[in-house]
Image: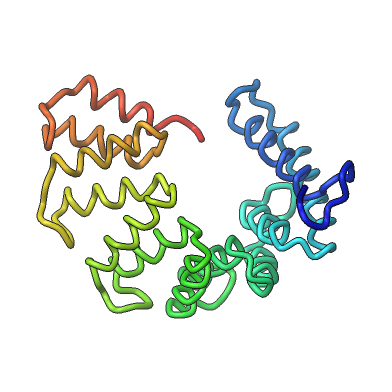
Length: 237
């Protein structure tokens, strides 16, 4: 039983997540017939229930409500409102809120750009083993934004994110080996990472693997396979 939830009592945050996930299916037509009106109704339902949970002090609901404002799903699109909710979640040490607030600060979305403050937020979320925050730190070290450029540290962050289940780190590590950044260039190793990501549905890995087959890098050139991976990457998600 979730602490603070009485057995048999409705959990607004859980109900909201269900409505949000189903709405996403209707929006993309994956698993159900595409129905944008139904998707919007479900997004509105999710927003209402997240608000209820947020009012009860649920930091996860605060973080998710920020995502709805960012995308304009069930609520008016507003980056500043998104940041406001993420900040509330981050104040309660919710790693999803910390990661999202870090992104907003890093990119200057809905708030003045402050790359160092964004990195600090990602470090807080990464300290709680949030894999996407670990990968975001890797990107910061690769770019040298908010922190000194350090490709070796970037690789360590990507590997840590991958060990914690972040599929997208396969793409990032594959790019390092493909481009010879921070590691010796190794097309075969790049293909291994891209393939691992592609098998788990990562669109960027699928697209990168298509390029490797198209150009014959790390694998024999195979235009049919290239087209198949490009087609996978192009599917709506």
